[in-house]
Image (cartoon, rainbow, N blue to C red; front, side, top):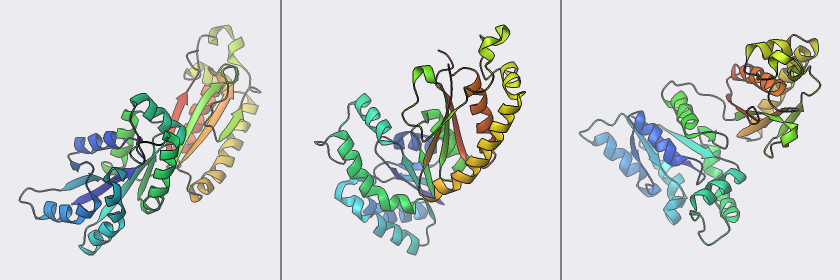
Length: 284
């Protein structure tokens, strides 16, 4: 029996994760008090119905009972259960936005400001996050993308590194994305905008990609960027960072930045990192 404990920040996508596990034919239970974990696991094992896969959501909605989590995990281990912990996370900015959109009180402290409640929850979850087998940062994931991440890990067995590399192409005319950790300016590259046949195309089109990358400075830049990021990413991961946002900017965010972002994503993906590409200004 595969036993998965789903936990993480409120608003990070645990309800979406449960639906994804249900689609994988897991028996799922939401908001189980941690003190009942071992008893529930034994019940599943001893039931006349065959439970081959089980996913349980355990989070701070359990209130004071959440403090029993580590004790219950220890009991599970002594009872011979193998389990994985999936931790869902997101940036403070994203979590605040999600709570405001849904107009829900935060379970850590319904009477507090949302940002203060998030800080309380982060402290409560810090130790279980360290113990987690898988960490998924959902800040830049749609529901469909989160489900695909879960399928990759728990269906296809493709265990990737616990850091998500989010690559965002953008145009400086519309401003730099506020959540970028690293920003690279590619306005020095030849601009397809001034080629009549390419003005209405974008960096997803082969003609634009070939034009941008036929120039030596483009090739050298991409090679140097690849070398630097391969050096940096393991260190970011070692420091416990779960998401690295890389901004690639050109003037309008349609040609050069899109081309470089796509090619960079292909390179990083081959290094077995979870990679997300977003083209913020491609339709402007």
